[in-house]
Image 1 (tube, one colour):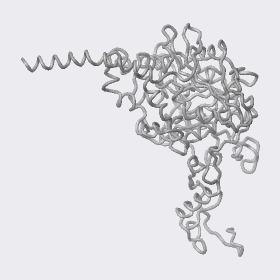
Image 2: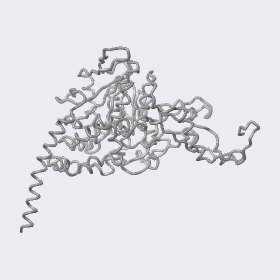
Image 3: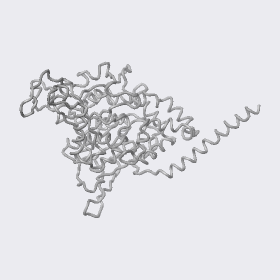
Image 4: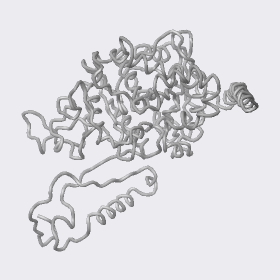
Length: 509
């Protein structure tokens, strides 16, 4: 009897203690982590939190290039989930990131569903029904800061969407095409994968992995958060577990991570609005009689008139697979078939190889009537024209080669540099070039490998040649780029010739 009494008292004590301690913790966190941006009316009587900054590098001339709007991924939904990219891009332009309703410092929507229409409409109200100002630091040789209003202007915005955020960005571009100059999709979520029959839904992997589900978030909303269990007992598994093995790197000081931004972001995931916001965003996108994703199907099929750029992760940290190893279907058709990816000749057009999730991104970038054409790949097949040697730039995507995953905007300078480059390409497409120290680039050396193709006079092993070549390139680039450059030398698909000769000058023929 005494044992049951002690157990009862322990359980009663915990149930009394945890809500009170949780409430005290929330008071501390609310005071410790104040919002960094401003609040702007979103049209439903509430206001969303948005952070805008621009031209923070005082050596960069200020111009009127399009403002970049960042739409963050599912589950996180905060401006801080874009912090790495936000900090880098705002050196050379004006960039705004915001907290969607229910995430970060933005209050949850009590009436409107979280369909793409409603999310896009709220963002439109924020940008058009408010005066959004950015204080630009004074340039070298000047004293007064430049206070600039954030408006779409004649060029419109560059809308950037990460994962589920790509759906919201595309919806904005469809509803207000004159306000958007370019679209940038990072791990863009396709729409044609979802039919009324529910076939082959390509949902973000965080949902498929089981780390987040409507049932789990419902339990969180009703019990785990209000009772303080999430805060006091489940935080490492439930919150930090979303970032996997990357947590240590993300908490590093910028630019290696986002530093205090991580603790600021995760602190807001302990407040009352987060669990129901995640649950509602997923449910309104994929569930019910009329899932929100259907709102973008017709627009994607019709095509977008502004140029579009896409980036694909290298691996999935939630599924534990390399992206090129995954198999996807859109409406029952292999995503890598040319009817979906629109790649006519993969070996010739994209000799680095394309597969899996990359094919899905080719399908997404081809939603645009003017998908990004890679000026450095001029061998793509065009009907009626010679395939090789002609000036036919390829439709292309950016493929991560530095380990980019689902949380790429927070992963560190190398992955962030890949994402930054897609926005620089978007700016370039509308007439604004940028010199940026972390531009990723690639080039191909066409030839054959020493030590494999012939023996006499050229005996250096392939691995040794590759190591030396990388060292030589790094020496040319200099120490300024040592922390932001990743060089990978890969063997191409071209087989070695059966015979080879050497001329007296040492040129292989």
